[in-house]
Length: 497
Image 1 (cartoon, one colour):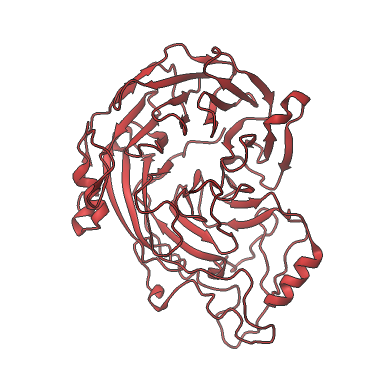
Image 2 (tube, one colour; image 1 turned 90 degrees about the vertical axis):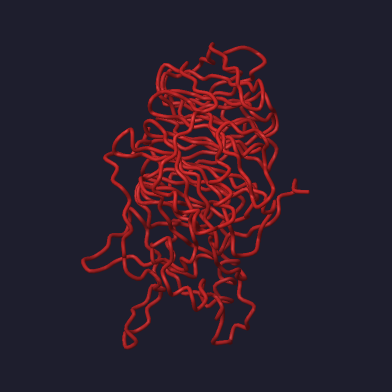
């Protein structure tokens, strides 16, 4: 159960020097050596050696900070397009801080615009004998040599960020925005209160809601218009009254999820093993059932509604179990099974395939894929991975590729997996011949492992962007990363009209 940032310090922009290297020496007289894949936890850096980011591995990579570290964040659904594949991109977030003092915490409502990058062919079209294979593979244009707002020095960082802060008493353990009404978000605080907040989002001249409890309109209009004054309030913290403040939990918590089928329906779980159901009474009020769902013997760590059934949700716990519940049939789980031998930190329900696959990540660094249709037969595990050696902190299925999964761990790695892949030596040899690839890849890497992203410290949470295929954002003690790996194929989901 690894969650809280210990002794958080205010994030500071650091000049880490160039990370634009391709793995070879910067000296023109030095011999060119084949690039070596560095394995975290296996390989060690010798004195004087340092890791360099390979810019050709990304279609886009940006870094930014909003002040204090954030344990949790969420995307805010926007009106800029259902499926967006063309650069530059603009994204909206909500995030909660982990400040040194309780009174210094806030919820950030922010926008990052001008996210640049390039699309590449997975296999270059140039002939095998062409010396200039993939000459366009550099992620950046000429202007990308300059370091922008993000300040990490990795690839092009011309993205601009604009921020508004809303006061939040105590650290924000987790925050989630409602998909159907993205102006509403719920935050779990370490004070033991769940707060539901409203921001009247407006993109240009298109208001998303008419209901206004707090008037965030001026802030979000400024964010949408990218005016200079949008950032003038970044140092100011606005005091807003929440729509609802529920004090029925007996302890603080981390588990929270909005129902994707029924707008406004919410479940929240605490460290006292209790789960409460929130039912919307109107656009701005909720009836919270005072009688909790009880079935775990320890802290409820994560909650996930079924993507297709409005009354079914899953929970995971420090007791090592995953439980599946139906709100229509009482306060006990429909079924409960041992998922891991240690704490189950996070779960994710696959939204692309039939609602039967549930991923879980544990405190021992392992993660598993469960087929809920196999529960009656006993063992529901259809895949199990032991790549990470430290606790899994976040796990999420891609909303666009049913077999693709992203995982973050306390080992400072974000990994992306494609469960449909199997090792094919003939195919690998053909690919290397076409690309002239000379990478010394370790033989023992799982064939399902697509990508390893590093460079962040104390990774806490990741999310795929629902409206931008292939985009991931992760948060850590040293800030946020936006990344789009170049080897992730982004196709449209079958259920998109």
